Image (cartoon, rainbow, N blue to C red):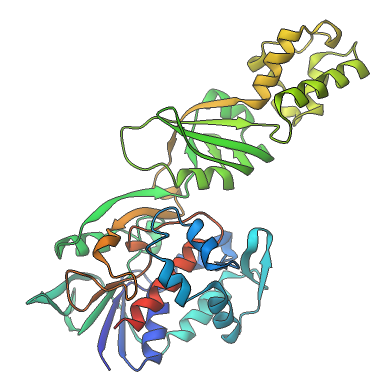
Length: 402
């Protein structure tokens, strides 16, 4: 039995607390927001996509940063383990498209209430943690605004910088650095992108399905995937864009996005499709053809990109114009893109360097009695429940590692 203090009352913090209590430890959770699990309550647009129903290798593959480091934690706490746990806590679950797991009720607060019950054996203290007290290389306690709380073991589970109003203010990074840990510069991730307003504003609100997005970095392809895409007033969003943003790290790079609006057809097949449309109605205007290929609201943009006037008759389209149209559809460039800030980010990239953490126990390799859990580490994944699975798996690993 150890006296354990967990800094952070979020998903990772309370999962670690409930697990540690069941292992017989005395547990205190410090949370500086007005209540625990504020961020969990708003995840998945209030529905809480609490994990992804997939195998360990798929969890690793969907974790671009830190997947290899997390292999052991994912193996010891699988998605099925988490599903079984929450169902045992009275939360029936369902699996939706993309293997995303949600409560049957579609209410994130059912998950929140269940996790609070799971951690009910821990003492919850609403206070600010100012730093971790270390003597002779060993954890001795946590300094708070109300004084020092003794501890033989501390789990740092403060989260990142996204959704600061829920308590994720990045304070854990400073605590880790003060103890000698390296912190990879935090950046917003799973975040919308800013793009050319002249292109995006006229199309704001338009959602596209089954388009292919390619992200390049300094001219080299960095990410390419097919799925759902959304134009906004300031740029672009949707699942494809959020996943692409995961790969945008570091300063001094030029990132660009190109869309393939007809990924199911190669250029030759698309040109053949255009010829069939022209032969079927040769005397109609070009503006009548575009809505047969794309949403009508994209007509102006396609006219501009292809150089074909909306009133031009189809029967006078030249082969060169058809090829320009094919290019406009297959390579719809959005130019340079940049990430929006933490206020719009779902998760934080960056954090405590994983090479300084034992992947089996989540214990610090520098400070005895210190462990990490969740987003405070340099690990992050795609959207789809993977980031919460990281929180659950690392929290349980940290608790078992005490």
